[in-house]
Length: 246
Ligand SMILES: NC(=O)c1ccc[n+]([C@@H]2O[C@H](COP(=O)([O-])OP(=O)(O)OC[C@H]3O[C@@H](n4cnc5c(N)ncnc54)[C@H](OP(=O)(O)O)[C@@H]3O)[C@@H](O)[C@H]2O)c1
Image (tube, rainbow, N blue to C red; front, side, top):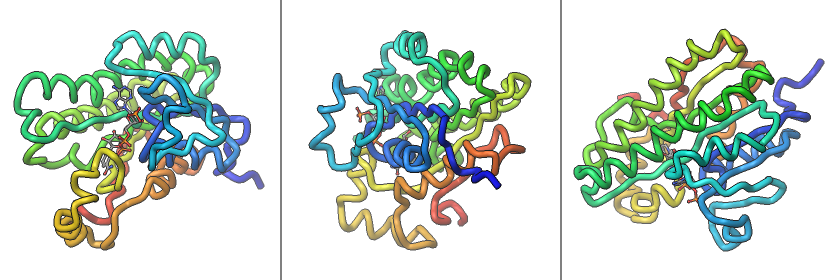
């Protein structure tokens, strides 16, 4: 019997896989036999050697700054075959910056507009392979985030895009699903996770009483890219230790 979680022979691209959750997802696919590529904003993979939550061992690296709206199409033009596209790029702006246009625009550009750009760019390759796209949004897609209106709106938009593309691309043989993480310690959340009092307060609101890990998110991504989820499309899995249950 073949192992549904064996990705040998599959090509996987993780946008925003240079660090944090995307990096954990990339390493999860690599550990199960896939040929995995990641993108990050820095020119060269060597630029991540010192980074704490980045392990590029065994991964191909491509530079992509998604604020260049033509960047995804340029990457897709010479990327070749693709079975799984994971979109894990994301930013947040603290200090009420998202309540003004520059901060709002920055976050919407990276967290929502670029998800569409990458989807359009890799749609042909995914159609060729009967592939899968996975979009990492957030529990913020489904609730208010008091200091971050752009982050919450961008993630709601990303989860919405998963639904519509799930329906629209079904006829092309492509499944589209999402993951909504709760709290995972990365450079995006260091403002909370490296602040003992804020971290303690956050942990009190998580029924499983721990933060999530990039490996926890990889588990969901592997399932969504595998035949184990062959009858799922347009759905976003909440992976939050129970954070949003009450
Ligand atoms: N951590 C959490 O608790 C949490 C919770 C819910 C959802 N999420 C979502 O999970 C995803 C990954 O976040 P993370 O927590 O793992 O943070 P992270 O470690 O900061 O990873 C973010 C990734 O996005 C890339 N990126 C940032 N700006 C970009 C740009 N302009 N163009 C292209 N790539 C860009 C980063 O590249 P560089 O490494 O070069 O900066 C990195 O690869 C995000 O969509 C985030 O919103 C995270």
